Image 1 (cartoon, rainbow, N blue to C red):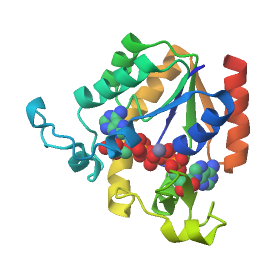
Image 2 (image 1 turned 90 degrees about the vertical axis):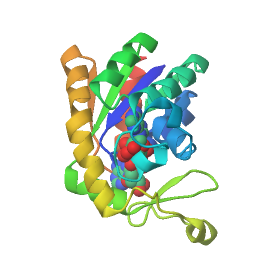
Image 3 (image 1 turned 180 degrees about the horizontal axis):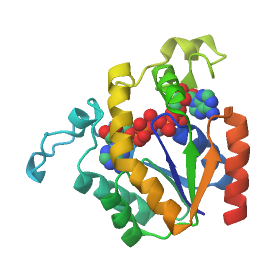
Amino acid sequence: PRILILGAPGAGKGTQSANIVDEFDVDHITTGDALRANKGMDLSDMDTEYDTPGEYMDQGELVPDKVVNAIVDEALSQADGFVLDGYPRNLDQAEELEDMTDLDVVLYLDVDEEELVHRLTGRRLDPETGDIYHVEYNPPEDADVEARLEQREDDTEETVRERLRVYEENTEPVVEYYDEKGTLERIDGNQAPDAVWESVEETISDAA
Ligand code: AP5
Ligand code: ZN
């Protein structure tokens, strides 16, 4: 299936995408991970405000559309089934996506704002596996894993607040856009991860 997963920073897109990949055998296309792997990419020929993606990301701002559109276009051209995470983040990107592919299901993980801040500031990542943890909600069992966990550079409280502001201004209209088209599947993302997954799995199975 061709799946789009929408949600605010910290809503659980990455967490649920990992489950979707395991269960439905699709590619995980994530602009955030792709950009983090290319934080130092030279943009100086592209007439952008800053010269690298990292300068936008560390401030919580969106990387320019032309950079991100090219990444998604390339990834989609190589994927059969996919879960798309982190894109589209504004209405222009949503229009671009229309020209690139059809979608079978559009999921929206709905989570309260105070919960988002708590999730993001407590998030930790395993640099070896890419697995996502949380200091309270989902700590690793293995002490070796715990010792090597890292925090994402944009998960400081100040940058988190700016990411949420950017989300409200640019990405909430995208959620409304799919809602008005009648294709949005709203999922209560405040529940525990397993309960969210149950809803996600059922919604995809019904749609695909
Ligand atoms: P990106 O990487 O996409 O970040 P984001 O949208 O801010 O989302 P996150 O990855 O922070 O959250 P998530 O929803 O994946 O949550 P997770 O599952 O990890 O983008 C980063 C930056 O890249 C942007 O700011 C921008 O600069 C740039 N960028 C990316 N795409 C772009 C685009 N299209 N255009 C322009 N710029 C772009 O979970 C979070 C935490 O909560 C974890 O600790 C997890 O363990 C925990 N958790 C998850 N689910 C639950 C639950 N149900 N209960 C309790 N805890 C939970
Ligand atoms: Zn993510």
